[in-house]
Amino acid sequence: MNGNRLVLVILVAVLAGLQYALWLGPGNLVETWRMHQAVEAQRAENERLAARNAALAAEVVDLKEGLEAVEERARSELGMVKPGEVFYQVVEQPGGQ
Image (tube, rainbow, N blue to C red; front, top):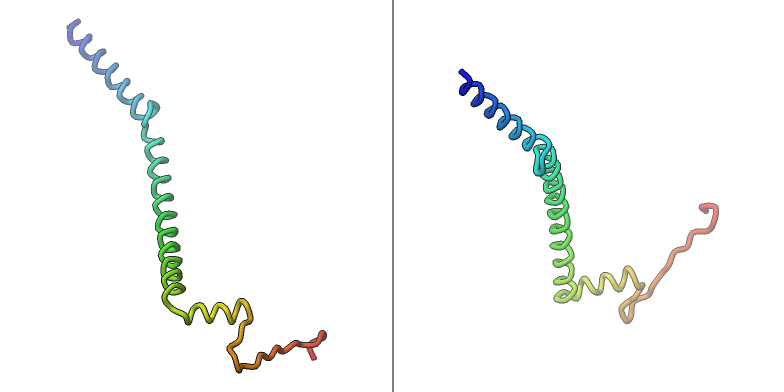
């Protein structure tokens, strides 16, 4: 009987040690769950940035190859006009009249 009790005590001690490692030790379940959440958040951020980079890359290609985009930007941002065109600027009076 004494040998069975010793085996039982050893098994309970091993089980307690494994439970400690599972819940409180390094790499425990809570830490693993938090790390998983951080990985998912980073993955979402990476997808958002990849979409932004793709849009910027498409704009760069358009600016390098297409003169229409350059002309559109020059007109809208710099107020440039083509030779022979007349630029009209409508200015509203204060008071909305």
